[in-house]
Length: 316
Length: 243
Image (cartoon, rainbow over all chains, first blue to last red):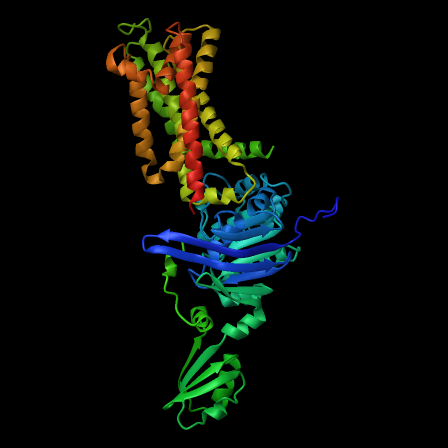
């Protein structure tokens, strides 16, 4: 590092050989089982996985809220605690309420006062759409508004790294859409963003890259397009007697076709396109059923077997 | 100066919590008027103090003790809502966080004293300016152990049980400290002298010409402050270590 530069984000985020085991009444739960992650400054990364995959535990270790049993965490070249103390990190944790008896504006200003280089409080309220709620007491907010305030608290610190742990859980569809728009605006300022989600669509729409976790390990890591192709398949089932599966396999968007008696099963990379063509070419197809490739299913495919270590014990 | 801004908001939200604010300030005041008003200018048997004076001092110790402990114990609520986790991922230092709690406690304590002194004056308590100040100074020093005790309770107890734990503890400490009636001899007298609440009550008496705090008082208060501060630090670490 040369003198006089503000290379505070140098090194990005590095997790090496990270492990964490919890003791539960049913024996130890290996929440995180040796993961290596490297995130460059400025990247927007989704941490994707079902409940109990180890996402929150990983995030807690990244923020210095949990101590790893093994391995190291470096946030911009420093231990997490130092990065937090330097005001480089803003986060929206998975659960958590606000303290009462302050107005929205006051709670955001209170948190802003703790950081060396915060953004303007009004700007944070504007960004998160809280301008009209600024004078309202925190205990009188709806669930979705509370989430917005927590988001405002996370970004008012003007962090270099923004961590969001399943941020849209309490939001309705419209709230989610707005939330991600704001998140992308913030990321566009050159910030590093890591968010955890179990929705593939959220990862696909908002991240450059997705890291898939299952039972405490990383099962895939790459551009979202690649991940999507791997796990984003849907299955179309239909009753369609007398059609050769080989012909069905030629339909657009079909990866594989199979037949069991009168039923056909199409494994699709683009089920929308497939279904249009299917109905056009075979109007007598009936009992049509389209099922999404759930992440859980995809993880089973990727990892080969279901988790036997009661992962639900790991989630808070 | 970020610590000061934080402390300011901390106080603001304490004063806005009307139930907490009214109860903390109102309770000792109501008690004082009930206990002291009927015979306010008569002497309490075996003491050189009038009822008005004795209970002004007694309830000053009770009220300020309650104010200090309950300010720290509000941490229990912040832990439960996950707010302390949010604070831990900010640059706010533990020291600044605790200082804000203690400052809030002392502000509440000073308001309690002001109200009780005014009531005392209304009931005929008359002291020189020097004595008012001396009494107040000693009470403020005597409150240090209770600042630590509040933080300790806030980290050990859940929101469900913080009320009973605090109420029980404060009642016991106040009783043994001689808040409600003078304890002049026997086992309770010896036991009382080992407690910080005893010396809080004595703080008032010293300024009124009663027996001095002396070495014993200073050492007892300092020892409790040290023990409870160590306990609070331990409870904080224990609380933040588990996730």
